[in-house]
Image 1: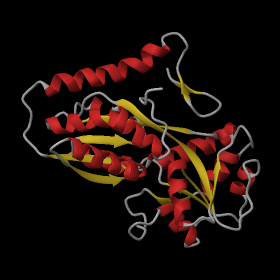
Image 2: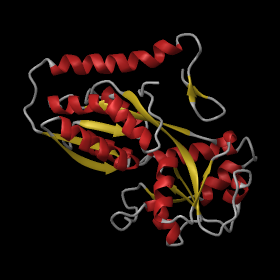
Image 3: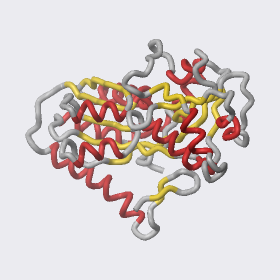
Image 4: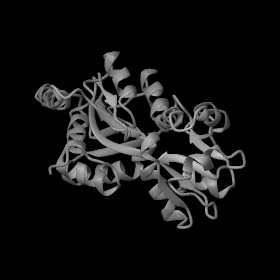
Length: 289
């Protein structure tokens, strides 16, 4: 079974590691290539449902794809868990790019989609308001401070919230009873069905901090970087190794997708698609070395 190492990265047993990593990608590609040779649903519009943290990267990927294909990509970004629920309830979708592996795997297990492949990785960081003195060494202490408002996304609805609560669990090994204290005080401000929506074009994490609702916000490192562009006074701190968490992003194509949907999924996995993801701060596992 996969496990996480001390740095938060998933690792597999040494024996067969190469096979374990390679086979899902091979199955995904073989499935797509086979489907591309079959009669497909005629459509010049590809429907992409993707995690909100992928908005900048996959918008650029979609634009690059449109230039190389006579197809348009219609995007819908949001919390991966909520998108999964919408697709499972019957919302028309073709390509689903999730901030975890579990949500697309649930669709695949229900025969709603094909194989799931890892296509990007992210990490969790702490976004800190201007004027609050925090270092990587003092981060846990400040998160536990009763006077400090700690923001997270919503677990189950949004993988970012799940990863934050996983970090809380890991913090227990550093400070006994830290998990319970952090879970009690965490303000689930984003990613839920009733979460407040920021003004158009604003980072939800930077917005909540600017509005005084959070002093420290646990968010993806890529999202923290985007928030800093809006307000250079914000500080981004990588979580200490003891409770660091890595995020694996999964890609799947719906069983009734058009040929264009499969072509777009392949483009995301291509060198060009992976280079764009890397340029936005993601770790791109399929990028040639």
